[in-house]
Every structure is written in structure tokens, then in C-alpha cells.
Length: 96
Image (cartoon, helix red, strand yellow):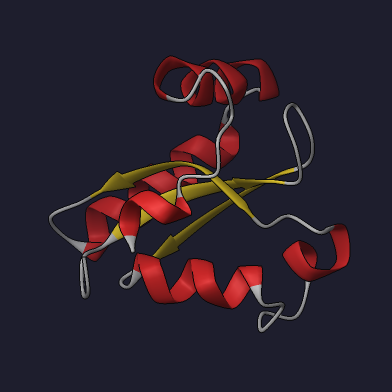
């Protein structure tokens, strides 16, 4: 999963604060969030739990998906997470 475009959602806890991001290196980017290497929102609000991700063929499609997800209502985002991760487990261990 080294240079694979991906969209991801981080959470502070179950039904907590959400963050949607895009990257070309999911493992590295999530590690950076978890270790507070990324200044800003996720560090400030303690949003470190990978609860959903989606791999893409190109950065263009990943960026487009990220933009669409950011426009979604919170309820829809929660439903998306729970459709594949009903227990809100941290999925980081599944990608390393």
C-alpha cells in the first residue's frame, strides 16, 4: 500500500470528531497523524483513529471523492463508517 492514492476518515472516538483526508501513502500519513507530526486540526482535536478508508486508481479520483465526502451530512459519514466498521475499530493495524 505504498504509493496508492486513498481517501480516509479519522475519528477522535466513536461518533466523535471526524477528519477526512486524501493521500498517496496511507500508512505513512496515518502514522504521521497518530504521532502528531501533522500540525493543525487532527493534532489539536486528537483525531487519530483510522475508521474508514478507500483506495483509488488515481489521485484525481481520490481528490474528487474527498471533496464529495466533505460535502456530505454528518449522518451520511457516520453511516459510511458503520457500513464497513460498525465497532469503530482503529483500522491502522490492518494496513501496516
